[in-house]
Length: 266
Image (tube, rainbow, N blue to C red; front, top):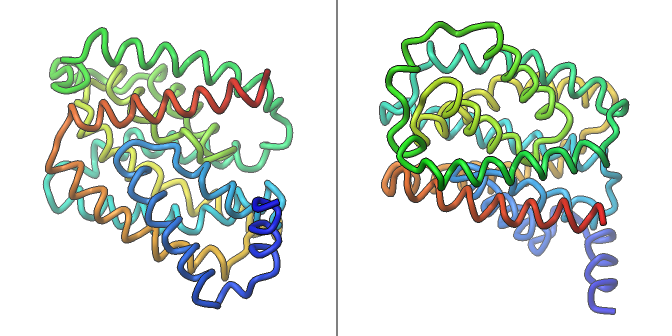
């Protein structure tokens, strides 16, 4: 009964009322913080927007407004602190960007049930590697950084971007993992690249969703205020506490995300 009353309130409340402004901004802050430090927090936003009465397609599209502002803010901060090289990040960001365009446009063609099961399996493998070879994630692989950015690497990040165009949930974790495993970055550098890559592809995904009339701009812009504040705090926290902190945060988020995926598909 209480859940039904909350849902009824969210569906009928004026988004410019003080309670709704607070709900949207606080949700944006939490999502912005967790997405900056680890990832996958956009699932919280989806739940809120759907409780407000938005279809999943509109919730997915509207969340990208906050994502754009959030990751732009965190990218600027990582750059100022010396953790983000735009030239190197562009090698990853460009294939991710192209992949996201296809992912956003052809999302309806993907069998989401199978895709989520495959993703859950992949994340289990990822968390194993994070703790099996912790040094690689914290210190990186300097030799790999000087290797040529091959077509195989381009395809890996293109596929990652395709997923990001389809749904923002979990894409940051995939970018971090691919940047560590295939490019040799440490997890702090990979996290900074994640911010830049998402910032780069989000305008294109958002444009496609807007063309299809799926963006609730008023809600998205209010929500983005919290996103930016969360990104600022999350970036400062990431830089202060370093690689091991990020690794544990990512691990916790992955476990929660895997649980959610498995629960949905059993």
